[in-house]
Image 1 (cartoon, one colour):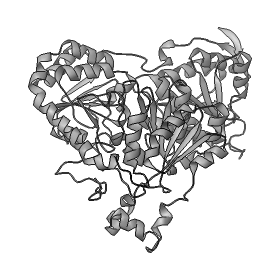
Image 2 (image 1 turned 120 degrees about the horizontal axis):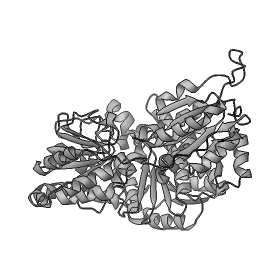
Image 3 (image 1 turned 180 degrees about the vertical axis):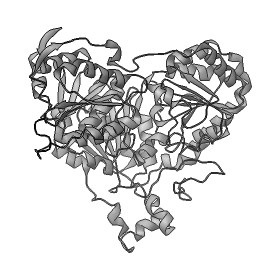
Length: 587
């Protein structure tokens, strides 16, 4: 150990843990940032326009790089940063938040910024701790990386004393320089499940008549796609995924039935409802992939494989729980499985493939529609057809999640998908972080105009840093995709009728959802970015190609139909959906 300042130790530790970018709103850890510069560090210091944006950038970076994303802010911005950690917490992403904190000498004296925000972090982190002295920097810093990357990934938080986290930066101590290489990436460990449990799981799957694999985000973090596909092919088991695992299996694979749950395809939900055994791989079976725990139906037979023991049997009582890493455990299952099982399952596989074919047949008129304003289904089809083979698709939440989850196909094994866990506006800044993590890959963000307005100012960040992300804006001049979601249950009218009535109905419902009809392409150009406005469906392929080829931050503003609505989840004949029904004649 050597006597160094806190700032010197932090600069060296960030480098040691392989941090390539820190996302921040200054002023915070200014001496540490200076030390990075003095050391000739390659760490980029990305200054965002607000703390939430910075957190979302760190999240997008983490999900694509599989390394912890680091976000920092001064004490007064702590509550904003905590709000930004909500989404990576919901999605299970390793983000490390560092904030300033109150001074001891001014406690209770009403000092500017003195409110202690430490208590707001535990609900949105896996670990949150104040660093009391410079001597505690090494062990708490290592613990932050250790917790963020172990088991189910999640955000963590360290609070450093001083409004700008500056108190420990100038203090000196003999500080341990140890860096734990194991915890610089996800997964940090690959525990193999017990052999006896592996054999039992394979036997149950071989004996089932109508099994289905439900793959979740844990399968993605484990990079278990090849093993999952191999096992499914060996045993002829249809696959459905959560939104967080949409890119684990290429859409062209004959066993894939699509995304299940709330933002889903009928084919995936039908397969789960008709299965006699569900093999859950790396999913916590939360509300979205299960449509509020109704799909699979309560009481279904379930086998669950997860690296996090507290997730096993949490929502569905398991017939068999398997504790282990998805990749190595699936490989072990593959070794003891019987390929003859596939022969007798051809009928079940064909039935599920029929559900998939019917889904697309029902939507064919809309995915090929030449209507103006543009149908979002046509926009989805264009992205499915024209996204580059190595593209990363980033989806915002709400209606953006519904369109991308159910309607866009990732047809190439090298395409990736990350999605918002629930915080509208996440998509654009997360897309910037994703592009910084993979600068040589095309990154395309799908968001609505409502979501894009949240962090529009980060276009300046993209231009300043040359972050060449493409943003496709589903622009219907409205916060909502369709009035049906808000008013159909109240007024009993179709979307077209509601649009006609919006200007005259008592209470002015348009006040609650309509925005100004603005040209985001022109706004982008005014900020130094590239802007392309699309009003005709036939122009979509050229606009996508042009945006990606421009090698500039680009906004593709697509003028879409406000009355269009994504299909609600199929819930089965005996279960009523809580989502408004799809309009007759529009499906």
